Length: 157
Length: 157
Image (cartoon, rainbow over all chains, first blue to last red; front, side):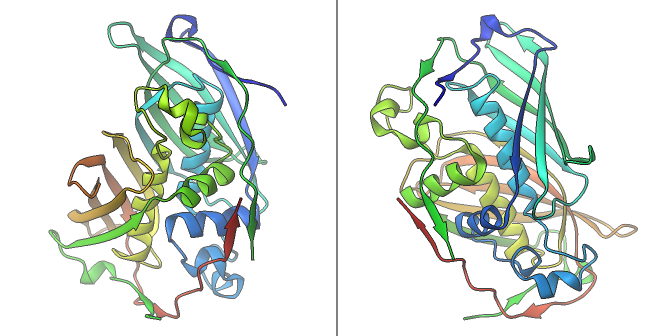
């Protein structure tokens, strides 16, 4: 498997982009419920969700927040980044089976503190924006190129 | 087990508070890695983390974002809430074993759209603020008092 590497502050340029995609499946939504404790039936109970404005189960909004944070931590700037802040505007529901693509674009750099601002936009497989926002990070000073830790092995009933 | 109930827009008052606590354990951090895809070694590899500024493994910052979203969805306003936006300022690391308490306070209501603003503050067991921010939600119009769905049964290696 490929190594995990980063972009240092000095390597990063305004306008630089990266993306990160994941499919939100049933297992993922159950895991997010278990990890956060949010067991709302709109996420877990298809019968209940059918009676809501969404007509079907939706993923937790902050699930997409987690994908944005993963995009930053895994892709741009990558390992060694310190996450300082994130704002999130939830624009449209994410349904089970949707493939979410997070697009990151560097919009500003602040040399004195190695702070980087990124626009963070998550879209579904139809190109619809589901979450939009902005991240503030401190970019890594040191180049990292490290073995990628194994994905934890998880099972869900 | 207790039912899951909510506060409707009309029941909510400015100044109303709620809280929600969870301990961030090793299993939770592995689950968050699996659900987000963020397998950075600062979260998963104790040996690697010992060489970082944190000296030990830390939880993903957005894990606490997930606890804030759960506090809103489970406690105030609770089920039926539509999450519109959240800003997050990551102030201090969360370590494995920390107990995080999310404190919510209603700071504003906007009658025309049933929008409610809440301050969202997450502290650790020492009272230190780890994440601070603000949430925008559309509060439920209808009272809900529903059976609490079972927590998904999850195992992690």
